[in-house]
Image 1: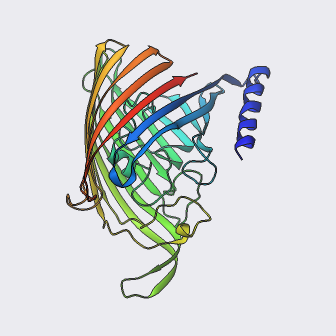
Image 2 (image 1 turned 120 degrees about the horizontal axis):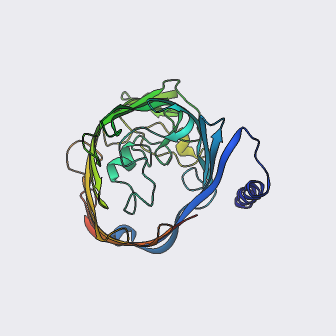
Length: 371
């Protein structure tokens, strides 16, 4: 499988490099990035000390007839045995962009939920998105879906409205209809997810937004009901989520914070392999139907556009109340050799109330490059 995907990628590169695109196709570009990682995890029950290929992506994008933008992106970061780590398609979409105030996108792409989700993994600034984003925006989703990098399959409209005297947009909206099952998987229960957000930009660099999510996550298999009777078929778990977001970016400073809340039950086992027994297990998690989280971060320039100091508070409650609350405190530095090469280092102190020994440390070092 790896050799097949790699051969296809090399062939694609060769075609792009040597073939002349038709006149109605323009600006075709090959790009990508990779993140090489070293991480120490001091959690007593699962200590680790390892180098890792955190992420590698190759993408093609371009335009058709000027008004249509398209993108196809592959991710390589592990073996081929699971949905979460194998080489896989993460983006494949086309968007009609004739008007700034009304754009239409269809295919597989980012859920329009939260500010943190759509930010490029290198630009996001830390060793990963906040816990609430990971669990409630479609990464390692709380509901039990396979890791989907915050994406789904569907159709979305978005646009920018109300320009000020300087021509800067003051309002942005986005709303989409999605299968609700994550990437590369068809709908199971025929109920679509509706996800959207709106934000205002009253002064340059400032965004204040809110987001909503309603729909379901479903699985076809077996389970036992509350009366102890065996059941089989499609089990649908309704999901209701909302988020409040704020970000300020100016003069190489970044301040961002988001609160996310979820109502909806989750499956006990996350989907990791379509042929595994867990894929048919529709029993529910003991975490109940409530979850919430919040993060707040600052990225401050020491040397502008070269060296930055970073800090983040990141709290997530997987169930109602604080009994299983996990809080992570991150601090670190990054150094940009060029815009295409960056070295980052982080220290994290974790307090996880679900563990017998809740306190431990993590160290993460990442070398990132783009092409």
